[in-house]
Amino acid sequence: MTESPVPPARPGRRRTLRNAADIEAAGLAAGDRIADIAAVASRYAVAITPTIADLIDPADPADPVARQFVPDARELVAATGERTDPIGDDVHSPLPGIVHRYPDRVLLTPILHCPVYCRFCFRREKVGGDEAMLSPDRMAAAIAYIRDHEDVWEVVITGGDPLMLPAARLAALLQELDAIDHVKVVRLHSRIPVSDPDRVDAAMLAALDIETALFVAIHCNHPRELAPAAATAIRRLTKAGIPLLSQTVLLKGVNDTPAVMEELMRALVALRIKPYYLHHPDLAPGTGHFRSGIARGQALMRHLRGRVSGLCQPHYVLDIPGGHGKAPIGPVYLENGHVIDWQGNRHHYPPDD
Ligand code: SF4
Image (cartoon, rainbow, N blue to C red; front, side, top):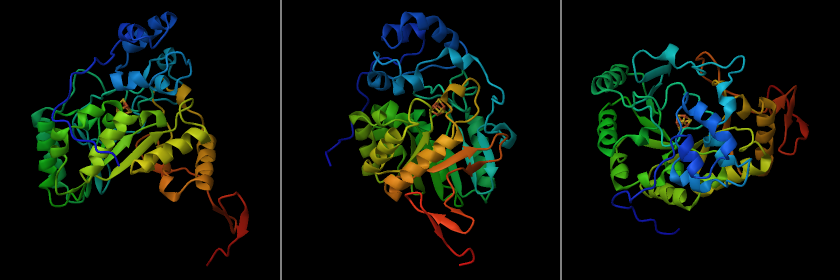
């Protein structure tokens, strides 16, 4: 493994693209799309970091990275069934910053800003607005809620992107959770390692250094996102002893082919990231052009099962609209007294044995 020394501080940085003019100036969209991009940007947050912009081939109209981050006019057209709170966070939120859907875990959302804004985001109505961080009072109330609920075994810190928190705030939050005896696991979900890898610096690693088992789940949808700078940031996390998971969203035109999904899962594992979730895209407003159908997702999972190591198999899941939690929706391998092998052949197996 190559050495990846931790930088003492973030180097001088190019600007994140935040509007239609920025995207046009960077050459990431043709002039005839700029008015549409501006219309979308007036409705939903836009951010494309220099790291992500550098991954886009502007000459490719179907570029899988551009598709995830450059706004599209179709975002302003909500389809039947799409909803502003697609996974039902609100009905399970007893107070700001907390979603308590399952007995043994809570979501904590300390910040609603992200390094990039994904065009398919399931929390697109909430992220990127003026209200960025939980106020100190609200944060204290959220921590108190966790402290008071002894069934909470795991705290999933999400957002937004929790690694956007200034290192001192992140450290203070994690220290508070570390001091709660019944919290045995802290899991942070982040897009930072692939989209703004220089942020994974010594201060962040120091903040993440707590006694409680801490996992980082990295959101990554295309193998191109695992570029050298991202790989370096990921190595810093693994060298710090942090177990890494991935979450991927199944996205039409981005990763919904066997070749791309296989390459992505292999690349994640090669960087010591265990694929955790393959999410079926949620019914967020204006995201229909990203959905390819559950049958296609199941076919991709069958392909993975037949082609790659068990280490590379994510759980294919769907968040049930209305807040009923996740359901695994992968292919079934046992039916009517038969078990199906990795090549698709059926074999009799006694149902009671
Ligand atoms: S990083 Fe996550 S929360 Fe932020 S825009 Fe992307 S999907 Fe949404």
